[in-house]
Image (tube, rainbow, N blue to C red; front, side, top):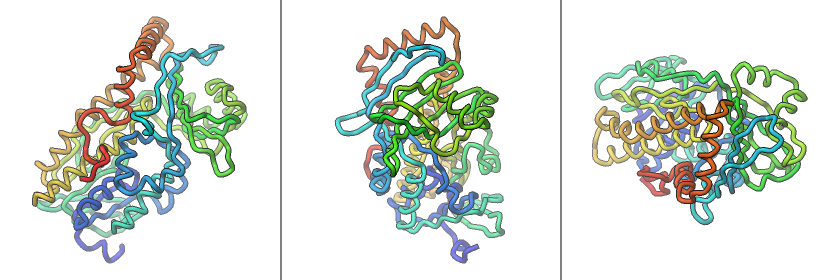
Amino acid sequence: MPEEMQDNVDIVVAGAGYVGLATAVSIVQARPDLKITVVDAAPAGVWERDARASAIAAAGRRMLEQLGCWSQMEPSAQPIMDMIVTDSRTTDPVRPVFLTFDGEVKEGEPFAHMVPNRAMNAALRRRAGELGIAIVEGVAVDHFDVDGASVTVALADGGSIEARLLVAADGVKSRLRQMAGIKTVHWDYGQSGIVCTVAHERPHEGRAEEHFLPAGPFAILPLKPDEKGNNRSSIVWTERTEVADRLVAEDDIVFETELELRFGLKLGEIRVDGPRKAWPLGLTLAREFVAPRFALAGDAAHGIHPIAGQGLNLGLKDAAALAQVVVEADRLGEDIGAIDVLDRYTRWRRFDTVQMGITTDVLNRMFSNDFAPLRTIRDVGLGMVDRMPWLKEFFIRQAAGLAGPAPNLLRGEPI
């Protein structure tokens, strides 16, 4: 273990994904005197092999800009210029568009961008380095013990770190959440999300598409062309788990044939560009977000269906809210790990998280079926929304993360 890790720090963040890094950067940028160490179980360099891309809402972009990360990410970020929603079967000769969205929350500001995960992680790591945040990779947290005014974090390599606060941002199957004794509400959808990148002949013009199919939503999300100028899109394809596993295991010809049935021919010939993987889908909500000297953030606090593309953005909201609570408490001379301080974070995030979890659950159950009466009802509903500009604007602001009270960073303001 590096010698400097034996010193006390103010905060240990477990998990060097976007949420863990964003939390650390947000706090230290506002309070440079606070010392943070980020510990990650994944081996060094694993993040560089992540071929996926994520949707960053307008509020998240404002936050990343405020943190000094967006300028590094922007060259590879594809703005979503508009979005269409259809409800059909793979056998339907035509997929009527029931709902369309303009992609801007205000002139010149798209409601979301698609950003490669590698670019996002690289920008956050660069900023963490500039701020003096230590990142220790390939070392898991073995256990932790809370004792009065501190938490001792024991590492798998035999080392330990003493801090005032431990933040668990270690994913939906969080080991630290289990160690803290925090229970979850969880159910499995019996679905998996197939994620891959598709190259296609014609440009997408920045359009995102959500096709509600009987097995689940099929999303086509625009990406920036690669270095060779190839047009590309990211696919998030929901299927029953047994079907998804079979499809991912098939050869390229079979997989691309099934993909083409759902993707269509509007962008010309398509081919899979890079790896394809399937991820099991479910709803996971932590019953508590905090404990003494302990806080959950990101997927460790909530895992939701990707039907609304809000998983990462919920995590950035956690990072922004927790950072603001910690920074403001430190400015007032309060104990940043005390339960009464951390309860402010819970009050800020619990309702929004539960609301989004329920919303995505209801949408998935409503649209992932082929029940004719329900199909008629939902199609009429989509058509009605399409004819109500004020309601469409409300949904866009929700998707952009700009509705309701928000932490300073999500408004593009410093803490």
